[in-house]
Length: 278
Image 1: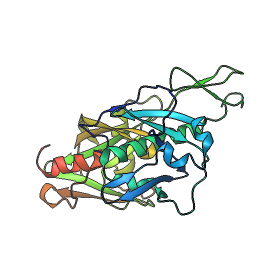
Image 2 (image 1 turned 45 degrees about the horizontal axis):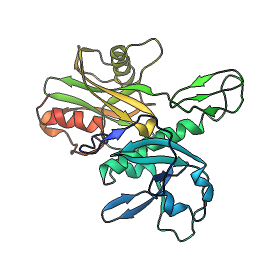
Image 3 (image 1 turned 90 degrees about the vertical axis):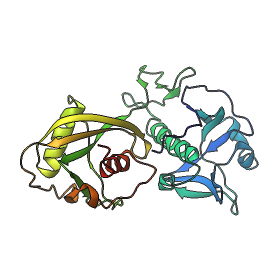
């Protein structure tokens, strides 16, 4: 999965020390990120690459994290050279970009970028939020409100019926490949209850024997994904929620039309079942 970057080491401990010329600068505009594509993979600009037109970047930055002791920072509102080798690319590039540890850095930085962008002002009194010097937290000097990065819990659900796995396709989304059922956990609900509710809502089926598989940070949607397998409980007749899904089908293990890919918990769970490992 995208976060499996060993032997590289990701460290998200908050260390707001000043950047150096060789520190990595992550710059985002909407869904775009500034990078360079090469035959060896993606490359992010370093502060030395941007400083000529952006002297203020050594004062206007946010520390993000380190990978292998290399520091990554968020920079804002930079001037870009018209013929620069660094170009804005959609963050979807990180689903397949190499090297994998850079892709993980880019999409994780994007999650933090979105959080900072949406918390410039206090949600309680409207005053400007300030950065804390010791931990990743924003606070309001006026009403003392504190904000920490929020992570949305969601479930990925592999519904099985003997040698069959239930696959679906989303309705009205850019992602058109087969996937597993999924959904966000609601207030006052356990993740196991989320599994039961989402399966019933999306395909009208009851499930039992819910068992946890694995989790994944999924920064594309600010989500912590938790994967579960469960068994069909009763009839297998599907009642499709057409607002959420374009289709849902049962597939015999050997007929599953999905190939292995790197990025997602969904794909790993499908392939585990397809290969007889579940």
